[in-house]
Image (cartoon, rainbow, N blue to C red; front, side):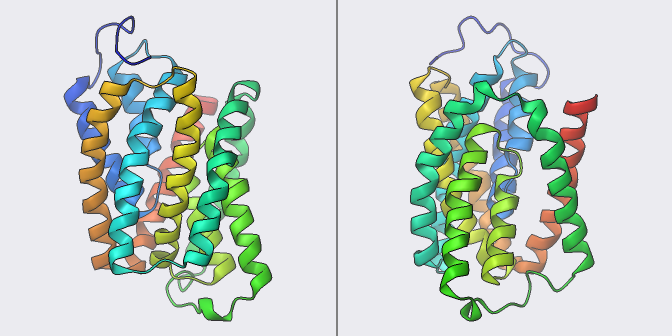
Length: 264
């Protein structure tokens, strides 16, 4: 699918609102992840007859551009740990591709309750430990924990992003913060690099299956890049405390959204 033929007239927010949503999604994704929470519902509102698979595929095209720009912006100011970022991103590409291939065989209803429970646990943990993710020492982490973090982020979360996706950025940040004793800002830098891999892997599959609207996705990608640049710049200026607050807000929004999808 490379055009909007057969989808019908726009409804709800229209194309202009959709482009604005793409910019907002880029900002959210750059700071803490979760841009799909903004963009996928916006796609479905703008084009009520759009197949969900096309919404997912087009979202991946948009997101891979924004996350790549955010990763580069972060890397210019905060050097990522390449011994973690590169192998995790490399593993994430095939893992997410395999997840995308498996997406049609496992219903979303299976994932939503589990993901909601995990997100609630994340929010409770971060709220109960105000110092978590703000003052840590990654140099004290041993080799085994680093290897486990690479495998979990690249294979486990990469597969999850391909097969379902909501909360991927949050789970990556929590993995790197918890296992590698990083500050939220440092963990967000690594999360962006790995997220490029997950988006690229899933996009490859969706594109091969004809589930990407290329012209619309390219237009949204431009807006997503603008939002990503602004989001990365904001996070760099405001620091880990700001990222922590945004993480909690985004997690709460994701729980509400998943709850509406599951029970509403």
